[in-house]
Image 1 (tube, rainbow over the protein chains, first blue to last red):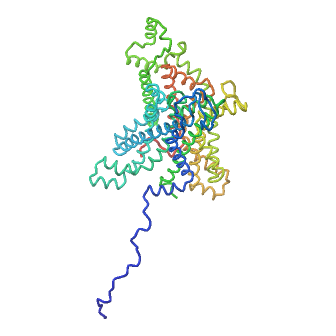
Image 2: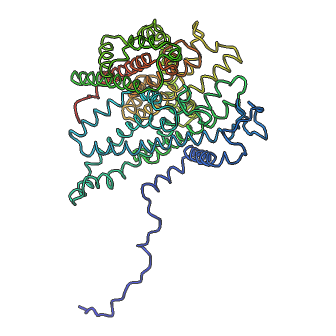
Image 3: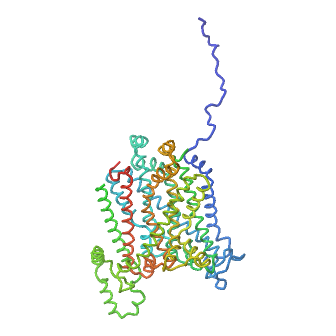
Length: 304
Length: 309
């Protein structure tokens, strides 16, 4: 048998770069974004929303007129080069009023969603994680709140608190968090039985840490989708309350009271109903489109 | 099933009790005066008599207990606005119009919504689907208080096809019911479409097809029957939708219903009427939700509520 000499061995040439990561790894959110980008309707909604947000911020600055200044000689004008969207019955510039209204409506929607997020997610997680009696008690409480018709309570609250942006947000937030809490709880009940929670617990992680670091990040997908439906609902509530005369009071503008005023004079000055309607419907429409798209993109069950 | 029903019944009572108490105490915190402008013109003695007559001089808890006692006996008090009419009386005269409007809009919504949902699913990703989806999106993004005035103006005033308001004959019903049903149509279309699409992918549909059943039988007996089940669950939220919708639609079309009454009582601080009407609305909704739950349980034998996991 031929002996094996040392010279027979040679270091192999490194031919390929097999270990290198060719493509960036896709995490959950990057993956969802990739899928969302392919959804034309959802992207359309997102683009419209970005434009509306920008206009709500810079819109009032583009015209020399303030939303509250009255021009009593120039009331109810049709759109012209001076007043781009016409004026209302006190001669206030509609362009400025509409974008101020959009700003306030979006503000109400976003703050209500933020409150909803904090209260709902916390309540849902605590209820699901601790389970047993805590869960049973917290669920009974939710069931009761859930069956209270929120618009009726909102009306009563508005009467007590007085009309204004804060009251509207509060009136919505008091009953609005329930859906979010139910949703989060449902997801968490499944999640908390999974191995990574057991692993975290056996490593000695405290309950709060498990909830905050392990459970909540895993339900964020559902939460984000829900938020896109909460914002339009809150905006709708504002418009509804303003319509029955309990919402934001003039001279401050909100889409709700612009719609209400516009509906009253529609026969003679259709432009005063038309423009707020278009903006209001666009906001609701884009949030709904975006929400539908996000749900398809974030929900693993919908993957093909 | 019986324990479940009893438990739900208990919750229903608790919910109603909380709503009564909540409304009562919120009303006590209200600014303003229930007697309106008249109070400043009255001599103090007469005012004392009035306050005493309505029991407003006694401590709050005593007023609360008296009120609860009366509510249990079906007496919701006397309206401040119309001293000759009791709240129950107001409800009795105004409710029929609201009820009729609600039912009519619900029927329109069920027919149109379910039909659109079925068409959308059967023509998935074709023109029919897109049309139905667009109708649903419009219904969601344009609320009834915008559609209402538009319908009233264009069809009622400009084209003069139908009356623009009031509540006199059958032709006066069409526009308000239509305005009210649009949102519900949207919800039902989306729900029915999603539910149909899910059923269509099931194995028993393949079996039915391979057995050589006609398309009519498959769609009618296998798909729709199964797809309609989840829709029953949203009847509760839909009832809420219709009910709050009547508040604004009645105002727009001057329908002499409860919603209109509610709006006026809000503006005139009529405590007892607001409390009574809120309680009445809440009661109707809670009962509808309860019935929906029970009905769902009865219809679908696969669901056994209240038996744990």
